[in-house]
Amino acid sequence: MTPPVRGPLPRPDYASLTRYTPDRRAVPVDLSDNTNLWGTHPAALEAIRSAGTDALARYPHLYADDLRAAVARLHGVTSEHVATGCGSDDVLDSLWRALAEDGGAVTYAAPTFSMVEPLSQMNGREARAVAWSRALADPDLLLEGDPVMVYVCRPNNPTGHQAPEAWVAELLGRVEDDGPVVLIDEAYADFAGETLIPTAVEHPRALVVRTLSKAYGLAGLRVGYAVGSKALVGEVEKSRGPYKVNRLAEVAACAALADEDGWVQRTIAECLENRERLVAALRSRSEAPLPSASNFVLLPVAAGTAVPTALALRERGVAVRPFPDCIDVGDAVRVTVGPWPLMEQFLEAWDSLER
Ligand SMILES: *Cc1c(COP(=O)(O)O)cnc(C)c1O
Image (tube, rainbow, N blue to C red; front, side, top):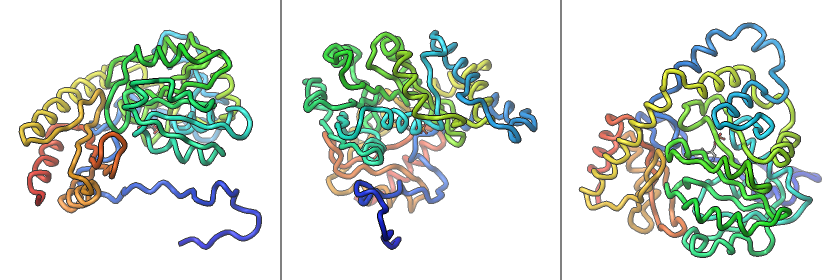
């Protein structure tokens, strides 16, 4: 236990904030964090290898303009619609910071990305969960109490569910031009093959956030971006500040986004194939994995057994992420999909669990 700080620190709303502490001990088969288990983009590695002295000795571009241009090219927009950051967490944090004055809640469809609560707390905002089951039936629930922001993850982590495009359109249709920002986190959209970027460019209050940590295999470099209206993107850039994307990350990300040899598309295709194989293998064992539009599968387990199941799998050399008492689902474990030999090791460990 760290002793409490004396004097005026910490900010009162920081008192209950803790460090992010998922179980990250090394394990032979790590299926716990949804990164690309095929490795990283070869073109990104090559770009890093051939970067010269200036990439380290000099400051990077102020606002990563090469990366903004690469993102803009990929999505058929102009650079003014693109903001970047040190991982999409940094982009999210910049947006949270940029929003309105103190107060004002963030609502989110739950269960979802575990950073929504701490990001809200760090930025002095209350986060309010609305169960996905209720939000899907009535998107107005996410707008109750005049929130400053609505967070929607699509496809959703950890369920893998892809909210229908018509549902998002309905939600956005109810948001006035001075209403809450609707943040659509598309960390896994590369796997779903569908994006709301064209919608975000048109709607003054919608913003899509993406990451290179998952499909692009660059989690270690920390690169993320947002696409939306020029005005909203401009606010994120101001709040983010200069020099957030380092030069090595920028050259590697540009090379990966160009995907000239199709590495990203190939690993995504294999991932989707293995996901269906894994789902079929689990169903044949009478399990009921949730349908997923992403590179992971959420697998419900008996009440109270998510954490013990994850620990037992870890003892067998396989890490998965436990979700105890998850809204709408109950206890579950989330399994990242990777090359088939890893899936076989998972299934072997699964079959050896005592039940
Ligand atoms: C992994 C993940 C991110 C984090 O991405 P970084 O770019 O690595 O910060 C953001 N959102 C969701 C939903 C994620 O699962």
